[in-house]
Image 1: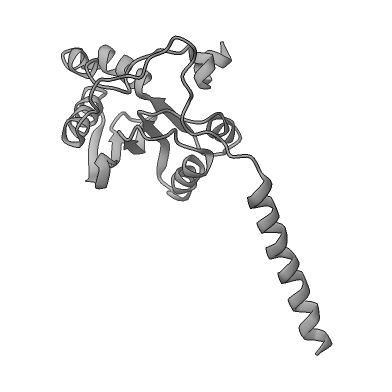
Image 2: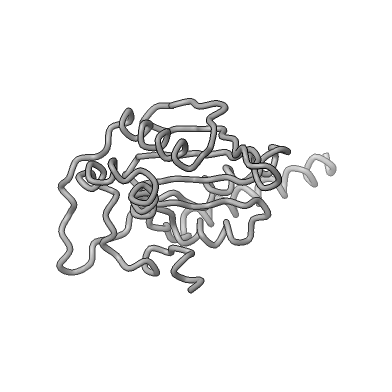
Length: 194
């Protein structure tokens, strides 16, 4: 009976501790609040088919060959691409989501990074999220051993302007592609490194 108590007491204390942490820890906001004077963006969201077409065209214009592609619910796209350049090329994993309901958090990004790190032949990973990423996601990716690029909606629009310029005007009509906040306020790693 004493051995049973030795095992049971820590389990019960662990659950109590988990419940206390869950009850009293602050929630991390996943949707950036509007600043004074900012209006809600009334433009429509991009359709999943058009989002897939943009990603496919962008990869082709960058010289990447699509090895495998799958489109999931809500327009989520997973692509395994190959950079054919000798010495510097290799396999690239891409995960893209057009969902604008909330920023991608650190848990989702680090889960993707684990998949990239687990794929032995993978050169790097690219995570595209139109809604952007939380500051915790940017901090988590900096400490991750897998090379991951985080691309939000405005940065995706910049890439499209550079590599597929005929698609850019259509994307500007959709929500999620505008740069209303300064780069450092969104947690963009490029701006914080400059």
